[in-house]
Amino acid sequence: MRRTPGERAAGCLAMGVPSVSGFRLLAAFAGGSLLFVVLASYRAGSELQILSKLTFHAFWKSDKPLYKLDVNWPKFPEQLTGQTFCVAVDHIHGLVYIGQRGDNNVPKVVVYGEEGSFLQAWNTTIEMPHGMFALNTPNASSIWITDVGTGECGHTVKQYDPAGKLLQVLGTPGKAGSGTNPLQFDQPAEIFVEETGDIYIVDGDGGMNNRLLKVTEDLKTLWLHGEKGSAVTQFRIPHSVTLDSVGRVWVADRANRRIQVFDKTTGEWLGSWSSCFTEDGPYSVRFTPDEKYIIVAHLNIDKISFLAAPPVGLIGDCVVVDTIQLAKEVRPHLVDVNKQTGAIYVAEIGARQVQRYVPLN
View 1 (spheres, helix red, strand yellow):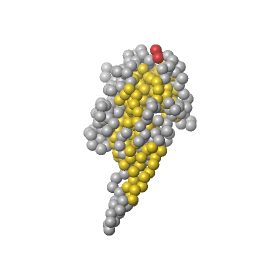
View 2 (spheres, helix red, strand yellow):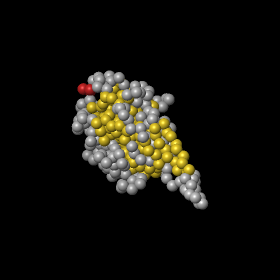
View 3 (cartoon, one colour):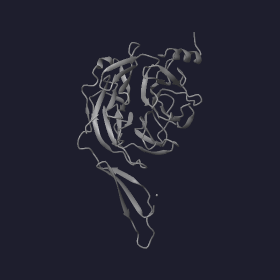
View 4 (cartoon, helix red, strand yellow):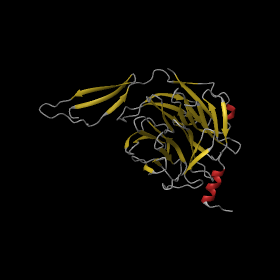
């Protein structure tokens, strides 16, 4: 018997577990410090030249690796029995959440301690986990998971408490759409949630939508960019999203092989990078805790890249500082970072594992 959308949603929820004249400025990175060189340029008998463009270059190519593999993590890898698509780190409580796909016997979420011990697993209302985000506030912690499934519980973003209890669902379970009131999604790829409650969602892991949304805690849309294409502010599979501490939103525009950057308050486009992605588009985007580097995963070439993060007020050109070449067919999909230790966790679809890389200081 065919059920209405409302009945399907109810059934899905029930499954849950309880510029200045006369100067040219050259901003340069040297040894991790930002140097400003001010050059006066005069024309004899004329006015000062007008500053036309502000650029920066990164001169801090690393001479040694930035990270090394922790071969002993996790301690019990046999608990990962499916395809590992995503990972999220709760640095306050020392927890690592891993989202995996598989048949009904494969738990969709596996939880490890930061040291690698297996803690618990969930097999809940998630059909096909794609992206994860761990939110920590002074009062509570929660895990947000995007579900790209096409069944009765898919096309949604779900929030859980640390024990796996379903707290809320964004979107209409089992129904793909593009609406904003109420919110609808078609295979939402990833989410970032601020402590203020504001939510950033990249919606479109191959579905009808190619958009970036910012919504409030009570799900009112503040701004969005939502056209498919390769022009400024358009997307072709927006796959990952993160924020920096100066209010810039970074989006991995996967099929366009670029990263686009926006102002978090207004949604204004600030710039984009494409020169670093000639071999493969960016699948994941995250910052190191000190925000010196941007970490990018390249699934099709089995590589992790470290890009020089631009200073405040600039986007400039993309510069690769270091890379980690992974084994063939490992297929790194999404990454997350421990904000305290700087450790990087890489969810690898092909290898069906999550690997941990620790900084070399």
